[in-house]
Length: 81
Image (cartoon, rainbow, N blue to C red; front, side, top):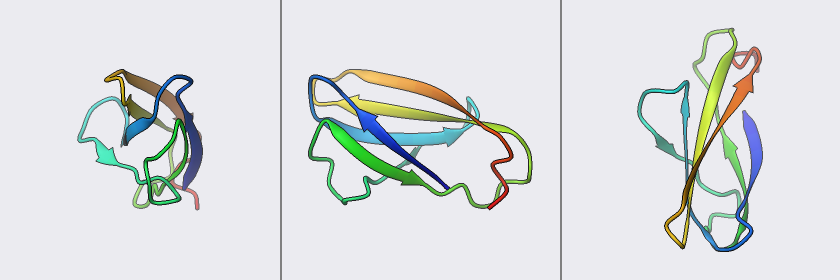
């Protein structure tokens, strides 16, 4: 499980998506409070079903101005929960 804070300094965050690695299908991540209503959104990604290994996680954010940002995060031993 990964818990993170998404921040946009100028406008409201309108979507948070994630995927393991740099290919594959994007999955929607819901904010912890259930609403995409601000420029700061706490969210949780459940990484169930991964083998014990090192992975990367890509997180894609969109904001109300139409900007898209993709960040790649290293996950060491992501399958260990």
